Length: 457
Image (tube, rainbow, N blue to C red; front, side, top):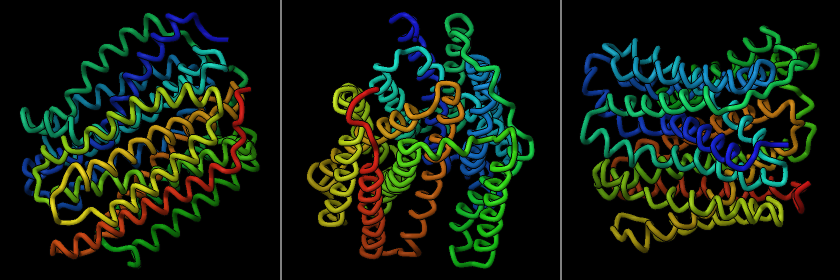
């Protein structure tokens, strides 16, 4: 199964480029936010925060139903529709005359990303034979990790030169290239036996995901123990329970419940969740640390973290080849241990005294190794457990788990920092984030232990 070598590589390039743009937009707004705030000074910070959150919530909530539809209607079609939607919405974001219009455009942009991403991964998996998948998925996963991590550094350079609107305009040439080449070179892949998901299930999932993520992001503003936060989270849990009950009794499930009976799929997704919570907290925390403790500019902070994701991308491809030989399990275990070690190192050495090479670069390198070992491998091991005609929904589930983990990581970062204002208090607050990284690494390692990946099937 699969295309010839040249067609397969072209598929990977086209799909990877489009996915890169969607993941870039999950983090590039970190550095665009001050400029957006200055442009819309009449809007409150809580309203403006939804310029960031609307994209993530929509992205995560729609990933699974979009993946299911891609399996049924065709991954190539979904990829092209998602690319077009994402590109048009990016243009609208860059031209937005008001905050309300910008937030609405970000919702549409998130919907386009949700359609595009699972189709992108499914097209790549269909293009290669099974024995090449560990390496290929590692490359695809590295593209996503690299683009999300490079968002602040690349965004800082662009916004510093041209303004915040160009954080959106840079998506347009990517969209033109991927749509033009996708129409010409991508091969359609679909399964007409896959049932269209029940609209009730889709609505329940969107409501549950949106409510839970709304509760998480609003906790930044009103606190984790406020009546408002607790009420919203309880409602989200009830909606999620209703969704699960519906999926067990419907003939057209949105998410096939039996996927989670697959051991590698279940534990791979748990590893993804735990690792991305800690990864996002670590990455967001590093930017905030450089700006608030070392008093570096956004541009300098963005460039300071750039070597980490660059190294992770290089390592991921090499680790993908190794996974094809020994399986992903030992690599994920090693990655979790390295992540925990990076957190411990920061607790011991990273403080108000500026020493980039020793105190910052060393644990950054450890984190890069962890990212290269974990992200692509847990994606690979989870999806290789999924039947061929469920790759779209399986990939969407894994990426949705990743987005949920990222949202939780951001919320926990703000909560753990608390209201500290002095440098010493900030250092103590950041140490709590580094301990979260330690816990996340340990949990990731524990989730990797049940994986069965000693050899490629």
